Image (cartoon, rainbow, N blue to C red):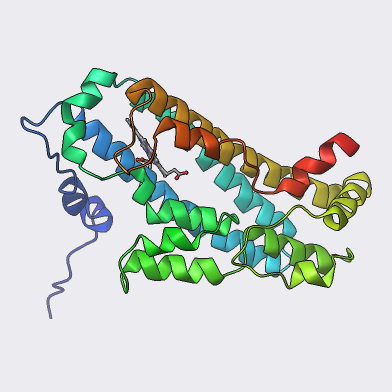
Length: 265
Ligand code: HEM
């Protein structure tokens, strides 16, 4: 019998036809720069998807006490973050007037409504019930956010791991409510100071978590600056005050204990 299955090709495997049909400008013409705007957002959403995939892996590896593989995966995440920050340079080649040529066609659309970005925040401990309610019930985004809202954060997986490594993590910290942000903890800070002084393997892991925290803050800072140079003090399409709102989100650490110990080491 003849084999009727078509051979896999570059195009069929990567769904190139479908992929190239997904960029649909809304402006008349369309305006030249709208394609860049769409492509860059879609690329970010793909990186967000990959980051979530890798964060789940890091949590699973920590839970399996596979420290060096967890660290290896964390290194990948950090490399992706560097690329994500660098990509903002491309968008900064778009002038305020070029953006204005199609901005009105965005209506209320804004990165503010990216559920994958909120999922990343949830994994990293920035939890918000309000953020979930913005998405329609029973949809993919809503159910993904609900699951991540109730799931332990990366910091929780790290504390559980430290307890199994023999550190005296207080029970209250191990059983904390995962729907809240991790609060700074003097007890955890004592543990971390001790760890940094005598446990090279885990101090390395902590440093990679600091890199991650700094990388997210770097993205927030660069995005806020890009917004400021593109739309100045105008409100955002998502309904916030714009650059002023974004500035407030910059500089808030994800893992405050890892920052607090620096002045005591
Ligand atoms: C010219 C380009 C851009 C402008 C002018 C812009 C503007 C803004 C503004 C004003 C906000 C605040 C919320 C609002 O009221 O809309 C915001 C939020 C946000 N934007 Fe952008 N943005 C741009 C590009 C991007 C890109 C390429 C991404 C990548 C996905 C992105 C992701 C986000 C995210 C995730 C938020 C929510 C941040 C938070 O709530 O902490 N933005 N953006």
